[in-house]
Length: 483
Image 1 (cartoon, rainbow, N blue to C red):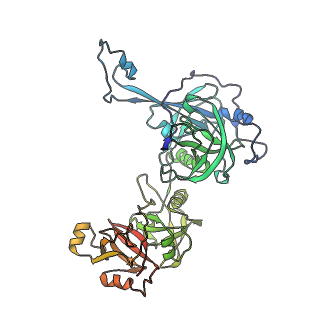
Image 2: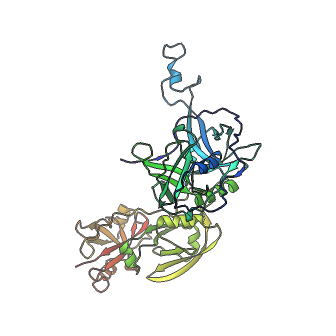
């Protein structure tokens, strides 16, 4: 069974403190090239590129003091006292933990990029250059969501640095080279290609990884993935492996995202993201058909935050969003990323479908607070389309049902009392759901529901769009009716 792992190791890498810059460490940007190199054409060797870029890549070591946690501690004078050192404890019972990772310099004055999980909770951070020179680093800021951290070191002389590539221009099949500190073996170089783009590995809301088969292992975290021009196309951050070692499935944060987030950390001390103020769900073919579309691109608004930016605009629950600020919305993750990258305070246009008619709504993008979970996916049940008009027993919502299922007084509709195991609603509707709309029409009672399910309004075999209130949240389903 494969395992997803960050790449920070658990050992400390020793290096002589205060070592001087080697002759190989040049000053200025190391990404500069006299001509653009064909990224698809394999070079005869990576040696010149590696030699030029190595001075900008650093090994990162951290240490952290950890309070006693129940591990054995033997009293002074005991025959077993010598084992206290084995458990890593100091005379006060505290112990030290360390980790290692990689990073790279992006400015002559000592700004360094790495992963948040490399330096998280560290008391002390040191960076070690390829010459062996060691400098203590100050933490400027981090972003847990994208696993990016920005460090700063002080140097009397300008440091060699590299520049970011336009990662949007990188293509599957392009050659790439990784430099890092795997398992403490600093200055290790590996090469491969970009295997895939836009990977979602379920590590966070902003997953958009570059996948590579270049060998990266624990300790490569925070290290650069270079293109053949010597520009950073990504930051190595995770692997999928059954053993913990490289099996050709490495993942890097795209350079464009890293550059944007790190610039905000440097300027504001934290990342700043746009905020829409809605919850959304993706669509399947049935939902697309109900809205008159032949594509599953887009998302449906399931809830509008009363305190969010969208609350003051003409949005409604059930709107199917197609574009945001001129950008096509492919799915929930795509919208999340687009909104996050939009300038705070910008007035944007959102194209949508409501009642099978296209509309455009404008609003001003807000700033997302760190604890705000808007624009996240609403959990959907597994799709299971069966046969039957609806395959669900419906009842009017009475006081007993409101108490039993926690249905708010403001929610009107019909209650789902049971769902037939062989019916079309099985796997979608649940006991306790309240159907509030059928086919874009409000449903207040059983009479409205039966009218909506009549052959005139719900022809056999045609998908019927339902709006459902479940535990206070709005959800949308299509049911293929049949008699």
